[in-house]
Length: 115
Length: 111
Image (cartoon, rainbow over all chains, first blue to last red; front, side, top):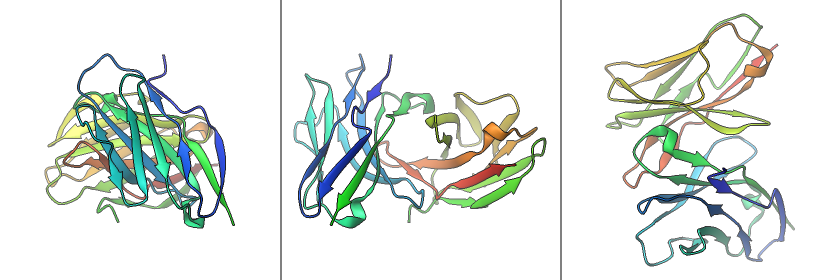
């Protein structure tokens, strides 16, 4: 079974609008971490935001916020006031433990910001 | 800038050849992770080293091998290359909350 599901292969948003990128995850662990990464066309993987499973408040980092709904096992990324530079692939990821194979990525969502 | 350095950034080679990709982690980071990103496969975990020892192995082919040296830099060796090995290869190190910081990647093209 897929550990991380991102159901939106592609999304469009108008510049200055907010956009939500969906992510659902599957785990039976109580302790885990959720992450979002951005990959622009240049190829680098940029860490955006982290949410721990025990964190009661949703994580925020500048224009990024993570809408964490633990019971629904969802960790959606919200980007406010979209900018043209936000056009990129976005990956949701989860870590269930300390070992490398327990850090898994979703298939990604390609976001295009329209002027 | 993540502080993780990968070389070379681009590499073009022929089938059957062998290449070595190098990764220098951030100062003080003991873990190194290697990932492969192909167009149709997404990000695939290959192998993890911690302080010189192999810690976890993922979908790494037998033609591939890696090691982490005493100065903590790591090398990923890819041999008997096939067209399907063309991909972006990332190394990453670990932050304080378990996040991975990635290098810029090494783009390998096998012709």
